[in-house]
Amino acid sequence: MLKKLIAICALFFITINAHAALQLQITGGINEGRKIIVLPFEQPNLGVDVSSVVSADLMRSGKFSPIVQSQLPRNYLDAQNRLNLDVLAQTNAEALVIGKVYLDGDKYQVEFQLISLAANQRGTILEHRRGASSIQTMREAAHRVSDRVFEKLTGIKGAFRTRIAYIVYKHNDKFPYQLMTADYDGFNETPVLKSTEPVMTPNWSPDGKRLVYVSFESRRPAIFVHDIYTKKRTKLASFPGLNSSPVWSPDGNKIAMTLSKDGQPDIYYFDLTTRRLQRVTNSPAIDTEPSWSYDSQTLYFTSERGGRAQIYSYNFANGKTQRVTYQGSTNLSSKAIPDSNALIVITQHQGYRVARVDSDGSVYMLTTSSLDESPSVAPNGTMIIYSTVYQGRKGLALVSADGRFKANLPSTQGEVSSPAWGPLTAN
Amino acid sequence: MKTNLWQALSLVLGAVILSGCATDPNAGSNSGVLVEDGSYNNGGYMQQGEVQTGLDPDGSITVSNDYNAANNGFTGPQNLRDNNTVYFKYDSDQILDDYIVVMQSHAQYLRDNPDSRIIIEGHTDERGTPEYNIALGERRARSVAQYMQNLGVDINQLSIVSYGEEKPAVIGHDENAWSKNRRAVINY
Image (cartoon, rainbow over all chains, first blue to last red):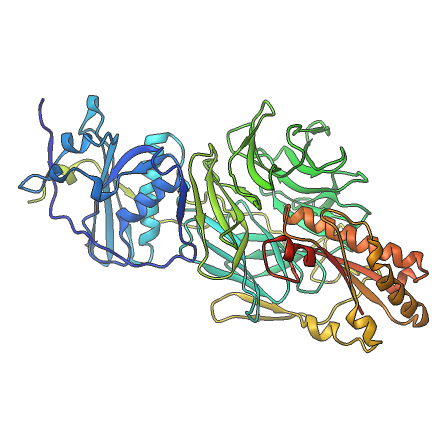
């Protein structure tokens, strides 16, 4: 067999310490993904090891199991420092990512190639791209490499350049309740709001510029819209009783919420176009936790109208309400999955667990923990971030939509809750 | 000794640009339901102290409200200050017999002092979802308010607020903490 040899220059093996507000501890599914090799990029020390970021992204997607450097065959480089793809292919990896970062004027160029290791197209360059980045945006540039590789191999858009919002509770802080945003992997944490009183349920505008949340700063719950760039805040609702669970419609035109101003909690939405508040449900039981379908045509919500809490849907086109979940004694916090008829819920089963309800109504448990809440689905539908209690502390966790990959994201300080995955905004 | 590896076709990736247009929720309201920065009158609900806002050196907005100062202002009988909490069973808003005495003594004081007003805070343990727990906390607060009314307290002396699971009395993730957190608190 013809050996395909590709030469590369000296490889720099760099260890870099960078700090994420949320660490990653993988608890399941590490070896079940598609095998891929990400070789260390040829790069100067920039504070970011690009190949480590790419490797971690691909692993965290739940779809890939990058092979760690120490498990590569020793002889994959020949005496002239050339890559032997046949040797690398012995690992059963389907593809290889190589790349480099180099100075180009006052910027750096990040360049990578995705090379097939499959027997029938070994050596074929599947993707080769280059892009400029400053040192400050190097993590983002690395996530962009991950996005390209992920999309090329899966056909699904990568969601590695997304932000998450969450609440950190620091018991002894002057402002114990803190609303933060961070990269989806916990890096670049940015405080948005700090309060002496509770802050709840942040949710993103579809353009990723604003957050809507509940704040008790005036000692009563009020819903605020907060522009994270201009820092301008607007109070949207502060009715007697509950003002809770604000959620922005994917088309950007409406904000659904739960209000109890007319008695029991019911679902309403504020129409940002007509600037009117519309009532959606009117039932003597608790209706809460509105969430939108991706076409903004259906509102899902939790209702106790049938006895215990179950998921219902309201269709804007025909004005009809119907029950969605039947399996499980209690289902809460429904979230739609993009390009899918399935829903993510919190189901009561030996505690509260993240589960997926498929279109045939069957419930598939995704976790085995007991205090899960606030699930939020990645904008490409592959992962769910939620909060749970892990080793005696409330923190965030990730599970893939197929339940295979699981990881905890323990925080460096405080108890973390209410994660909300932001939209895909960059190209 | 770089090779033709890097001479293949390359596509230049542009920088991320976060820009674009969107609807502006800050525009004025003509429906009367939108609250414009506190201009809405919350019919009969008490205003609870001043909100101080500021800008932290880290760029975040800070908001504070001196909860303790506002709640420690009550100078009524020590007995009422010491016994102001009603506990509940899991997922329940039913008043337990053990706490009827607590409510009776507060009801007596409110009847004797018609200018006094209370806020009943509803709280839950952390099990279940935050949104559901906010609704459950409201039911607990209402349950206490209803009981006080039945004891002859004027409705205008009562207001309620639910904190759900957001303000635990005891930090912890077991029944020990949960049983202390499923509560309604009477503040003057």
